[in-house]
Image (cartoon, rainbow, N blue to C red; front, side, top):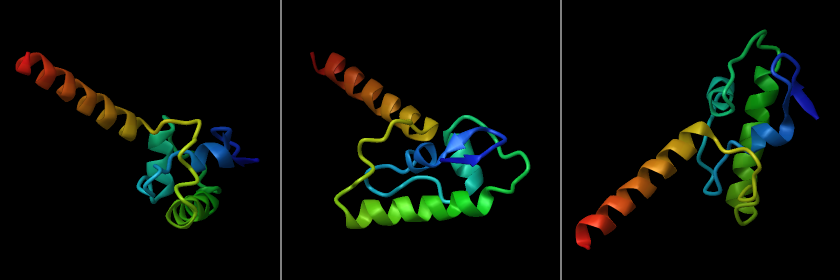
Length: 95
């Protein structure tokens, strides 16, 4: 279901910004940042916050049900890439 008409964002995409451990955006603006866009008219902000809260609760109570998400949050991707880069550097130094 499309939640944001301005950016054509679906409920699934918004839920996908929540990490398996339940971390992730809390506000609509943070979710938009993760999805690479920004809020326009703001009519969907309340629905986006509700979807985020629901997804976070599902992660906490249903064995990380959002672990198979389709959308990678830009924040999570950059941290993961940074950590992967550090691991490679450590391996190179140790060798």
